[in-house]
Amino acid sequence: MRVFKAYHPFVNFIYFVAVIGFSMVLMHPVCLGSSLLAAFSYSVTLKGRKAIKTNLLYMLPVIVVTALLNSLFNHQGVTVITLLPDGNPLTAEAIIYGFCAAVMLASVICWFSCYNEIMTSDKFIYIFGRIIPALSLVFSMTLRFVPRFIRQMKLNAQMQKVSGVKKGKIKTAASVISSVITWSLENAIDTSDSMRARGYGLGGRTVFSIFKFEPKDATALIAILLLCAYVLTGTILDTLYFNVYPMVLFGDVSLYSVSVMTAYVLLCFMPIIIELWEVRKWKRLLSKI
Image (cartoon, rainbow, N blue to C red; front, top):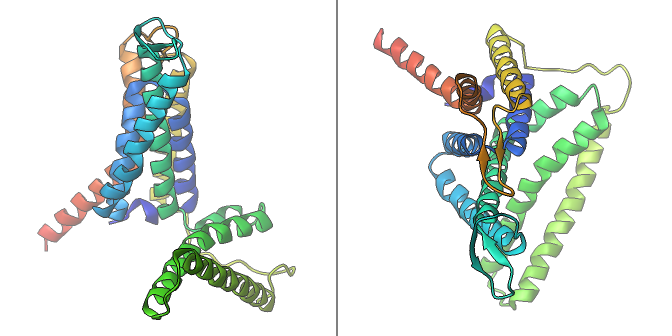
C-alpha cells in the first residue's frame, strides 16, 4: 500500500521539506539514526525488497568513504588514536564526525529517493504551476526526462547486442550515446509541438486537477507542522546539543530533550505509521465481512 502517496501534494511536499531539512541540520546521533532508519524503511515500503540491495549498494560505500576521508584530512580533536605516516594525528573525534556526516548524507539521499516516488511531476506542477509556471514545468520535465533517458540508453544498448554487428566497446558506446541524443532531440521537438498545439502559454487557459484537500490531509498537515514546531523549538533551546570538536559533548538528558527526540522520531516515521494504521484498519474491516 502507498497510503501517504494518496495524500494532498501540499502535505507530501511540506513533509519532505521538513524531514530533509532537519536531516541536514540535526547532527545528534539519535536524530541521525532515526532519520536514516526511517528513510531506509520507507524506501523499502515504497519500492519493495529490491530497495534493500539498492540502498545498501550506495549507503555502505558512502558511509565508509566519507568517514575515512574526514579522518585522513581532518586532524582536530583531543583523543589521538595514532599518528599517520605524514605525521598528522588520527583522532577519534575526526572519525566520529566523519561517520555522522556520512550517515547524514546517506539519509538525505534516501529521503530524496522516497521524494521521487511520492512527488510526481503532476504534483509538483500542481503546487508551483501558478506561482512559477515556466520553472515548474522545466523542473518536472527534467525529472521525467532523466529516467526516460536511462531507459532509452539501456534499450539501445540491448539492440546493439542483438543486432549481430560486432563493434569495439568504444564504438558501441559512441553509437548508443549518439542514437540516444538524437532520440532526445526529436522527443524535445515533439513535446514542444504538442504543447503548442494544446495552447500552452495562452491566456485564459483553465487548469484541471484531481487533487482535493480533505479532512485527513488537514489532520496530517497539522500534525506535521506541530511536530516541526516542537522539534524546531527544542533545537533553538539546544536540547539536541551535540558537539564533536575539540571533544565529544552531549547536551543534558532531560524529560524535555527526550520529548523533542520522540517528536522527531514520530516525524520521521509518520508515513510508515500512516501505512501501518491503514493496513490495520483494512484488515479489521475485512474481518467484519
